[in-house]
Length: 119
Image 1 (tube, helix red, strand yellow):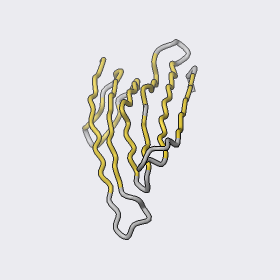
Image 2 (cartoon, rainbow, N blue to C red):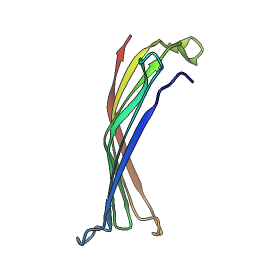
Image 3 (cartoon, rainbow, N blue to C red):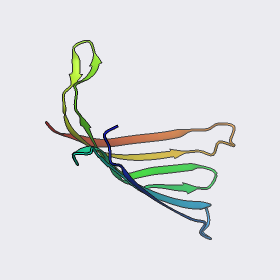
Image 4 (spheres, one colour):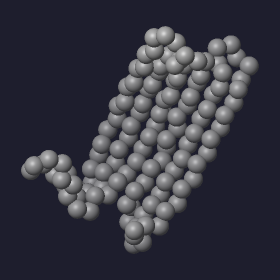
């Protein structure tokens, strides 16, 4: 593959002595993968989820920002194609669910964001 990739990741975990909180976890990473001509091919950064637990899941992507270059049209279905270009995505996510040790469990998930294109 024609790529010059750099990747970094940081994770922080804490078990505070706070009622109702078992563990706090924060992660962040950045991926920068230009091609060998130094043109952006793939880039991802700003992903900072936090996990808050007390027999339940709370996993929020505060910000997940990534860039992808499409160099040949992407065929989706029949005559539907995504054209060449540099696509920027910004996504946010909120997740909450009950503990999996319960008789009845539930999960809520919401994801929202935007796409911008530089053709």
